[in-house]
Image 1 (cartoon, helix red, strand yellow):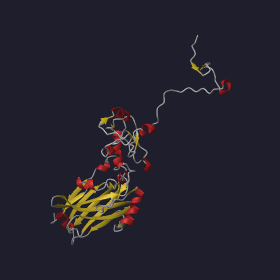
Image 2: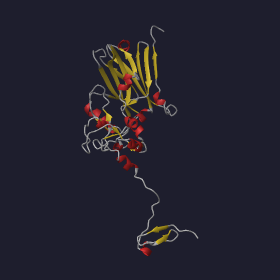
Image 3: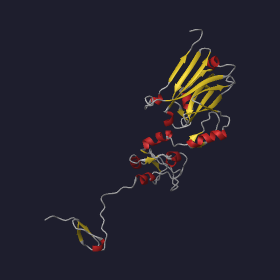
Image 4: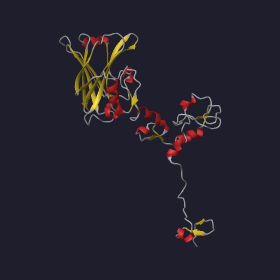
Length: 315
């Protein structure tokens, strides 16, 4: 005889799974859970919200004596727990760290449009380069603290930095005047072509003690993904001499500081600058090109060429 699986109801009636049970027949609506349930990912992530800044508490996770959590950034500023007012200690919560390794956290820029969810070990690296991260003002040396979305950048430049000239065309000549003036200087021009805006920045500064150098670089007013579709060429020409640099534009998200520090741009000293200058003014030929489908492969944007061609004295 086959044994029947039974569900015990409040009135002790045994109902077989092989029978059809309807609310009209018994007066009860019988439902059987299919299995154990777990909180949705969003609910799990909410367990890690810092009560001070509402960012996520990520490993290494420290707690107060009563088990309350705060994020690492807020922990440095607190002497007492914001939840129970007890003294903050240096107690690791290894259990929560283990749970955190299983949770997919939303990007901190999700409110701006990013839809990615990541494990905590990938979250910080992603957010540093997230295309939805607020853009800072790209004007070098302007000490401008403005931040906003990508579609607001050009409006900001137009209204707050009216001295910047915009030239149309994929091949232009940029004239930097009075390059021999003392002290650090910067020159900026906008170039508009292929439906995008590009910013050429020329900076003169001391990278080493007493040694002034010039750094020239092109940025796209756009994301790093958009930058991968283009290549720019900077060229100095004068008296049969030629100095050329080719590279992928940098996104204004990246800025120019790291490029200058790592010499990932056209670099030359004042002696070279004066070889190409006329009456203290330096002309730079700027050409923007679209990469072909063959060149625009993953990793191609990281490649650049730096060629210096000297043609002087009939050589």
